[in-house]
Length: 210
Image (tube, rainbow, N blue to C red; front, side):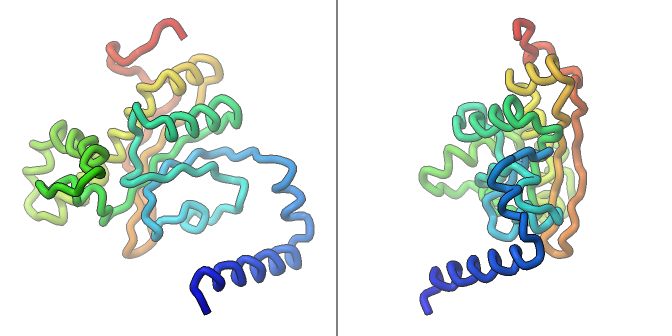
């Protein structure tokens, strides 16, 4: 059997099983979407938001890209962010990276990878900002793991720099911002960084005319 056909069969079995356990499940999903969380995660297939957080469809609004980046020229990310914050009014925005991230690892090398170089340059900027701390660590694995954490931290801070988040902070006191890292070896999420709504930013990033 072709592998894609197996996916369709799995879907049918899942739908039938779901209805047997909860006959109103799809009816509820069809009529309303009120997630409390926006998840900005890595595209890595081993880090599915719903499964690792034990949540159901409809509970997390999800955006994924290589290395869970918040890039201010990425209209896809900004559109998702605006919709989640201004229309869905999520209470929390989570940036979730993972140890062993191939995007972060690639950014720590000098290898040219084509068009992806432009994306990974944003991670190289994170390294440049924290180079002294990262280089002081004794092993390559520790440096790699710390870069994953620092990359998540910087993406959370980049969220706070957007007019979307700052306007929402001013108007409704939310959402709170969180930086998490998932460990593939044991399935545990580590909370590495948080920003409460209204956290003071460096003045150069603050918008006063929202």
